[in-house]
Length: 238
Image (cartoon, rainbow, N blue to C red; front, side):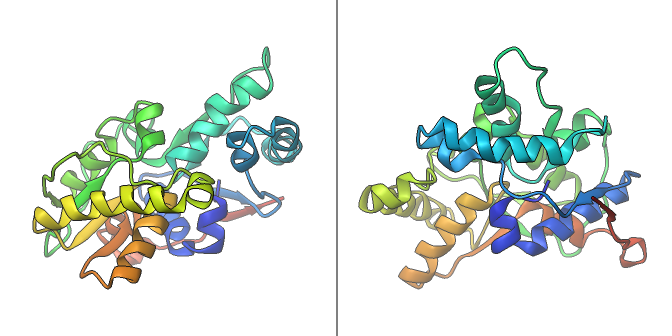
């Protein structure tokens, strides 16, 4: 499943995720009819509107026993936990965050090495903690030789919070700057995360403050390690 932010701003993350899945032997199907999972109105408390969007998403992915894999902890949380509340009594959606799927379902234990091995600070998203991803993305990065730089208040929120960044921009920005300051203190020059909302928020603050920091999704790093000869295209569906 391609997320809204991936579709609008982070297309390279979707491409990287497909390359990763194909590298471990998956056949990837992408339904062009997909839109949003419904999380924005759900988080705002407008569950009627969320169900209208979610109804479409459910129709798009109906008729297949294949698991839904998403390079976003927040959208995975919506599919897996939000839908359980929107549609009580219905079977839970079989959805997995990308790193979670690779480790727990594909049993990945090794990954091609990056050369040279980059040093990065990894930001765990709030939704990633919410669905208990733990260190799944970090483990994949370390398999590829990535060196993770420790920094203070690692589990602190980036301040994005979806609509929160719009309704409370000052607080949102201050939280984000606190996160960035801790990372800068560590000496890191690159921030890697598994949530594009966090990356968009932190990236905006970095640009506004003209900071010498770079942001990337972990899938982009891991896809770079895959030999170019393995490149394929996802199978269109729908």
